[in-house]
Image (cartoon, rainbow over all chains, first blue to last red):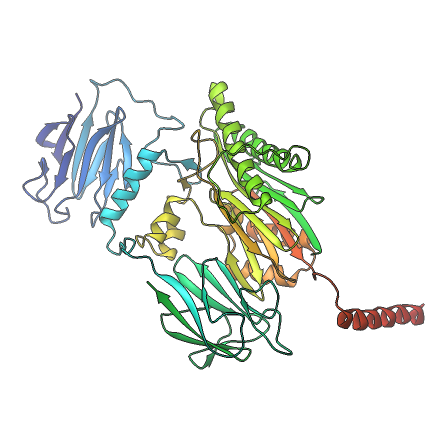
Length: 241
Length: 279
């Protein structure tokens, strides 16, 4: 069984075995391996077995976790490695276990930079969950789906209301436009509304649209209730539940 | 729609082999780009297999219209969209099966981004972190979503876009061809307008070159192949850490109305006269 030895300078302070449960490391006394030092975060790191490998994972600590000399977020441990946390280090003794090969292609727990890899479904779920647990700005999909809608309040168009269901919406005279503008001398593509990861953006086409009365030169993110004016058409952009 | 296209692939400045693969089938207006992964030369095998399978499946659409439905489809999809999506499912199967049969190829995979233009209709099918962009009236819009861990974290609000660019996890994909026997394919349909510019590229470009630079180059360089070359040169100047592949597709005027015919004719006549006068 693998063993972790907490060292301060050359003295062993405490030894713990690593079993099926993760070993937690941190300043808080309820850790399996408490480290009494101000440079150590309350819950600093943990060590556990995953797929036959001993893994150390930094828990978003302030001063970081180092394996030998390298700062890591997550790394596979080998017999004889040292984990540095503040001024303390933890010696890894995995001599009793089957040796872990240094280089394996697919199951490496820490991906090498620049080498593309694919996460299998389980690893992907775990990683996203982990990321979600540490993220502060997590937003989960709202209970009700909000549909972005254009409501025509002035000018001549083929409909009075348009639900924006496509990623690309074109406002213009073209037969292919989503919002078909009627009348003489209207441009085929007056303006465009595009869906991006963080919202809906209006951009110029052959005309420069006004949003809430101000002309736009580049893509501008639309907010609920914005007034859009282009080519003689006035519309409200709203999110409808 | 008059379509002019060009594509270029480059090994970059760091790697010794090129795992990217692309194909332009002018007769069909079909564009396929794939970025392979996997040790040794297996990334190259995977991307080539993806491109070959997709092109063959789309070319056979005429002679063998009975498509095997490999994945879910929507009632709004055109025949071409269905075919293209099926072709991507088929490519996934081919790579997965090849990797199962040849143990040394185990773990190989590929991204794929494909576009098929039929008149003014554009069908897109996509898996992985290669991208399709549309430049319309100076506005560059990414048409595909990256199936990478960092992109997913940005979508969930865990990372900001700036943090994602710095992340060491950029190479971790959530979806790729060949990883699992079944795969979810992103499919989309759009309407193209005259003067639209479509670009397909792998992450070797987008990690080195910013979107404003891409938009600027596509606008400044009207020849598709030269635009692709310029973008690749820019990525190489920045270090070219990965293989770089770019396909540029320019959409011309749909048809010429009497107005443009009249003036275009006059302009041509003036040009001819000018040439005659000069000689």
